[in-house]
Length: 280
Image 1 (spheres, helix red, strand yellow):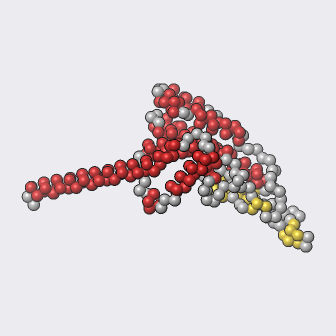
Image 2 (tube, rainbow, N blue to C red):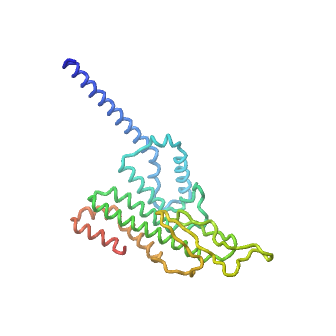
Image 3 (cartoon, rainbow, N blue to C red):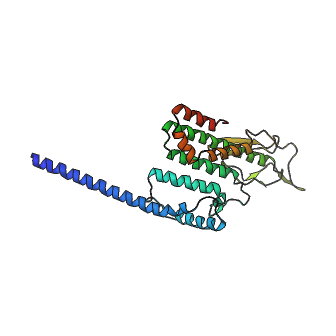
């Protein structure tokens, strides 16, 4: 093969590669533009929504979720835009926890406690915003680590509240368990066994215990709940204080605060971050 032929093949390969890269880049930008247009209406909603706004927002998000999986794969955003959308959406759900109830499958019970979900969305919003900041990588990692620790504390607290609710249930046949709470992956649908049918009806034989039930949280931690233990046991931490701490962190870590932190030297910035999460 002569040099001219080798040169021609090499140039042809380079041209084909450039064409392929250009086509891929063009297609990706077209997908980005399509996705931006699709999600743009979300940014029209912010703060505390009116009932009518909540209805429109829910109808909009439901229409997006109805997209076929094969079609959904074609929608994408650059990472920073995706994080911005995530932070805005989680803040929206924090301010409007009622949005969880619309079109949920299975539906949320009417008496669902939304307070832990409000704090959950607060943490998710802050994690997305932290990833977007211009802070050094080690500072972002530190803040996210603290936020994830708060999420684990929130989950444990919610599970412990649920355990108290179960222990306070009356001892009767086929007693339904309380509605599922935030942070719980699995729990029994009914509580209390050992009942037998006798002439006078269902009775619990003398000496029969209520038994032990198993609860698993979203992290895979298992809790064995002895139904014969005292109904009031010590909580790991006060729920009200934990919620107040998460609210304080959310209200403190504003865009202005992130900007202030980015202007500090490494030592001062590290001290400020630790001070913010001092109560952990």
